[in-house]
Length: 119
Image 1: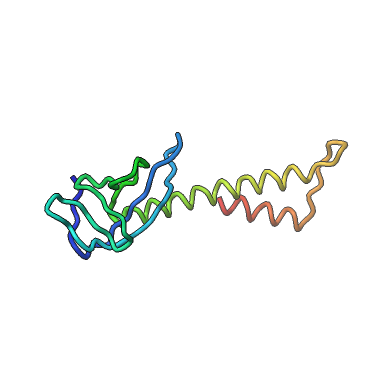
Image 2: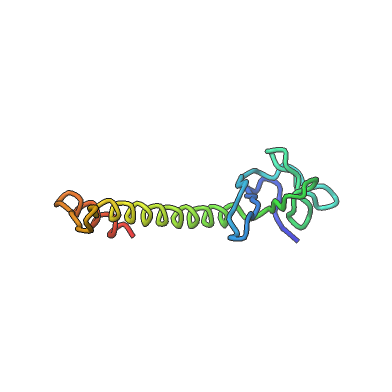
């Protein structure tokens, strides 16, 4: 059973795909809790006493807003790192000539070092 009180800031999201990626992330404030334990948010969303969105089959769950902010930040950091690694790979692949030799000038070397240090 999820617990929050009127006025609390809460978060909600749906886990999608096989990788457990967050989708439909949002935040709202609890404006009302009825006798059945249903949470009404200022965004218009309604969740049952277990924290599941009512009236949908999409698996949207109510969570603590701070927990969700931390999880979103970690996911963003993971995506940024993956993007940086892909850029590093592209930069390295672009340094090969057709004959198989590698040419990396001073500027390219500094850029590659900055990318590696960013990991």
